[in-house]
Amino acid sequence: MFSRKTGRKPLAGPSHKVAKTPKTTAGAPGVSTDGSDGGYNAGIAVFSYIVGGIIVWSLIGWGLDNLWGTRWIVLAGALLGAAGGFYLSHMHGLTSNRTSADDGNAARGPSQDEEQ
Image 1: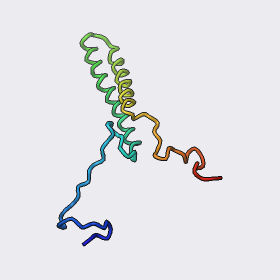
Image 2: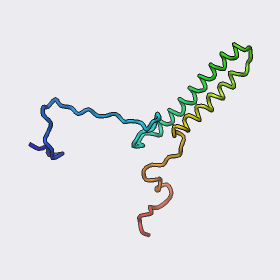
Image 3: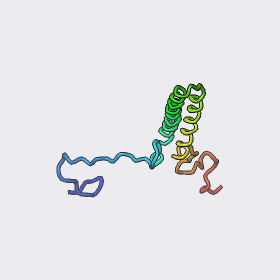
Image 4: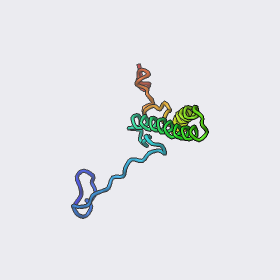
């Protein structure tokens, strides 16, 4: 017997369930392969890189300040961490100005395939 929806034979047994594969990312957090939810996730990833860099490098600077008896390395560490977070997010392609699959033609004016 064939299924009406697919035209194929159903798999044996009613308890057979097909496992769905999760969405994979294109090598960077927040970037989906189909581009459907990259905006919010990419923003969170950029925020995480920057805040994480500031925290980690500030702690390193604080440790060096205590070790060497200075007071300015913690600030340099925070700036270095922020710059490193921006660099990582840029290298992962999270800060690029990507357009949608239709190349954003709707925002630019009338469609090019219509004759006027």
